[in-house]
Each structure stands twice: as structure tokens, then as C-alpha cells.
Image (cartoon, rainbow, N blue to C red; front, side, top):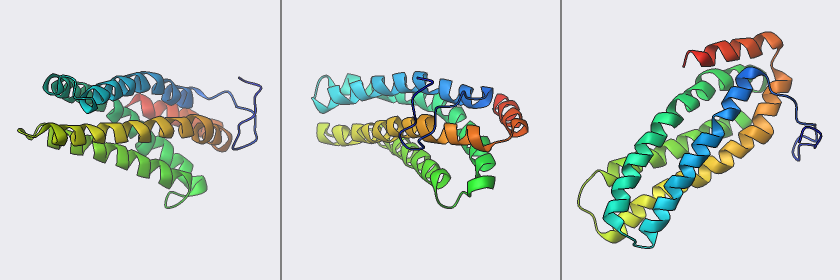
Length: 173
């Protein structure tokens, strides 16, 4: 795909520097976990062994959150501020990315609070599982935006020194 043009930027996909490459490489395992979460929510939605699947979903969501949190911190704490110097953080791509992070995390937090809250009807459990479906849809689209727009933009925008700084700083998280 190195020769194809980016649909949004009209620019060839650049080879990503090692820090951006690392951030991108963290997406496939997260997406794989998300797919597994979504599959469980579908079973709950279809009322297949709801109690057992909800218990499994709680465990899997906690595992996913443990993997997602450091990835988010690398982006929110390092990449986004570095790009923000050039394009700002209160509107535009960085603001959108942070908003999507916040929305996904809010859905995950709300799911865990409700799911671990105790006795609920099957309908309430299905509604609770929908919060993970929401996070799934937000994050799958979000990762695509990062890979196809944000990371190539950062590659073009950041200096070689900043790319090295990005790599060094994300190693500490």
C-alpha cells in the first residue's frame, strides 16, 4: 500500500517513524480484543446465557481497559500535545481525537459501574452491554482515523528531533 494515495490528504502514505509505528502497532491487538467484546455483547443481546456472558464481558472489558489505558496515555500525554503545538488542541483533529477517547472511556466506565452493580433484569443487562457496543463503534472508527489521517499528518508535521522525543517519551509509559 505504500504507493496508494490517502483518500483524505491526497498524499502518499509515508513510512512512519518508530514512535508512530509503535502507536499504530498497538491498534491490531486492541481491535482483536474489541471484536471479542462485541461478540459477547451480541450473545447478551440475543439472550444467550446472559448471566455467564455478562460475567465474561466484565472480565474481558477490564482486560481491554488495562491494555487501552497506556495506549491512550501515550497519545493524550505525548503525541497530541506535540501535534497541538502546530495545529492547536481546542478544535480540529486533536480535539476530535480527545473527544472520542473521552466518549469511549465514559462508555467503558459506565458499563463497569452498571454491570458490577448487582441485580438487574435481562433488559437492563442488554442495555448495559450496549455501552460496550458504543465503545466498539467509537474506537474502531477512531483507530482508522488515527492510522489514515492523524499518524501520517504527524509524520509530515513533526521534526526528526520531535519524532525521536515522541519515541523516547512513549517508552516511559
